[in-house]
Image (cartoon, rainbow, N blue to C red; front, side, top):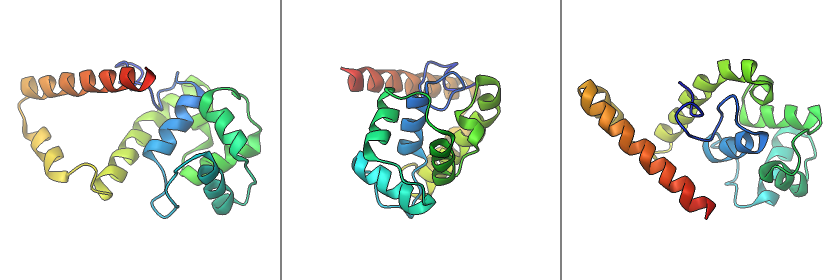
Length: 152
């Protein structure tokens, strides 16, 4: 089941390019790169790591959906910077096979930086299935509410 299947936005195969890029910035930002404070910082970090000059305007257009068909070299730089396969930006059938791997990588990032505590995941896996389902529903409801709040 992908995030799209459960009503989320993110790297799901049918997400827009803007959604995918925003998800990468929020969830797969390299730990050794300066924090992404704005589009200027995002562009500078990508350019510094990949050697591909990307402007802050290009980053803004990609993040807002105003540009949905960037040059291959731009996508290649994004893929290299975020350490994802180029196919992540491709059509749904190709992206679908990448979705679960990226979700697990993002979870690993959150564990490594302390955003999610390992003991919480352990406790979650130890819950009986019916209780785990309730926690799932609570998390999905909170995620939908957060998205609605961010959109308003």
